[in-house]
Image (tube, rainbow, N blue to C red; front, side, top):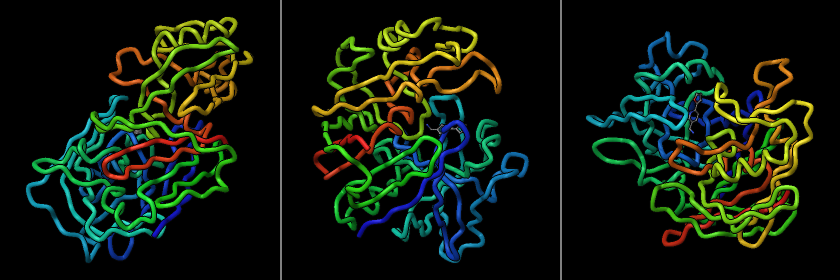
Length: 328
Ligand SMILES: NCc1ccc(-c2ccco2)nc1
């Protein structure tokens, strides 16, 4: 089988949110599908009202199929400093018509203020490898790992669009969603992420070396090696690294060069206007870059700024994992 679901960008393409039905009858929550983590967690009836105000919550008590997983707990802190923790149920989870009857649904007993403030986001659906699932004492499977054997092909695809709805597909490649050929690179799954290598990059004609990083639908920007970010902004007049902002800024009127990277022998171009990410504050004439250095973070992250420039295939046949990138 296969399934497809529409995903919708938040303001400034900060994240894309996708409706998921949980329990019986189905309770719809809008989740951030995140290939950079591997837990399906939700705001719940156990989340204090002061933290869940404005959010849809999952109430296991209202689901005839919810089962507690006694003694199971989880706690996560993300790269951006946000965090959440709680307990675990199993219940039916339906994504785009694909249903798994006993998905681990991690209900939040607390969330950090960053999550409370993002009222469109009702939780995360991890699409990383189940090896890094945070449930104790036993790691749980991601939704993709649970349904993979039922899918026509052991893959999911993502088509994020700048300020337009896009799609997540499970089990098939919809060829109408891409124009160019799909170019594949091998994924190294050792750290539980979709880690791949771009063999080269170019900015305004200048060619650079290889970049190894993770494909992360749950991170807004492209956090590249510091030398790469430096090389990019050297081509942007009046760009500078602003310590107080923690990144490269430039005049919003600047025309930014494209950033092209090569994966599996094919070129993907992030258009300059995607790299002119946003004014520091609404109306400011100084803008913050969509490409930043990855200083202080363990990983190089090809986040949404890169992913929305392409049609991307995440395939895991069991012994081999691959990532495919195509123009669209
Ligand atoms: N890369 C995972 C992830 C996704 C969303 C968030 C988030 C949303 C609001 C505040 O923090 N944090 C981390």
